[in-house]
Length: 329
Image 1 (cartoon, rainbow, N blue to C red):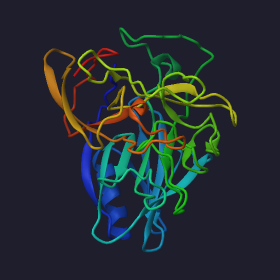
Image 2: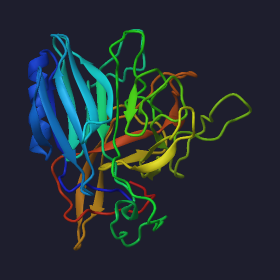
Image 3: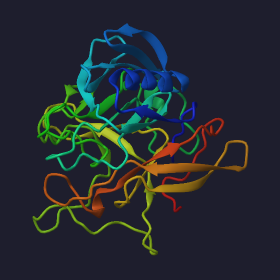
């Protein structure tokens, strides 16, 4: 089922031609949707996000000279500090951001950063995922699947981030063009081991990322679809590993998002009707954040890669609307 935030979502434009203006505009957008202002930092601001489950994380956003904006996610107590990522500042460009009370996605329309010879540092994303209710000492939601009431499991710190590191030959493997981050060093961070490594299985990813291997030639390019050719809509589970090189493990689910089972056009827009608690439906608009145009062993291009759709607009489904795990249109 889709997990909706309590805040709804804000969608805003960010000046991409002036670092200071970009920093301030992002701060304004995040505070408007529920992030808390903590303090000023050199060249920018420190903010704190709190999820509907009262999990927290902090973010610093600041200028990095006149040509870049730098963003760093960290734990609420600042003992675990993630990788610092950067957005390029250049003439005649405007970034977009979609954010809720505990998650944010930034992108430059039309760019996915997969062509690392010329495009890099054009997107960034971070957030606190929804965690199974019993793992934050809350009663399970009626109908929630896979409930494990384990008193020994208690989530207190759970956050992730991904973006570019500022090198022209190293485009960060982010959710803008792949469902598996960390294909290049320093493109993702998370609260357990903080910083990703080259090609490591433990780095953050959205499940499912691919079909099974086919004859030793890599993942299948045969996508999962409905009979009419449309993709299935799935829950965007996110996870990472406990040890370097270890298997990624389920940690939670992205808020205000769903995963299409096959590759869709960049910034594709769709609308669904989502049931509200208390009766009735609400139309919800979505935009596709993830698309891989190229094919090859490094970027997982092709239709099997899947596409992450983000919720748009301020509509709040009071109490958190729910949808079946797998549904069509």
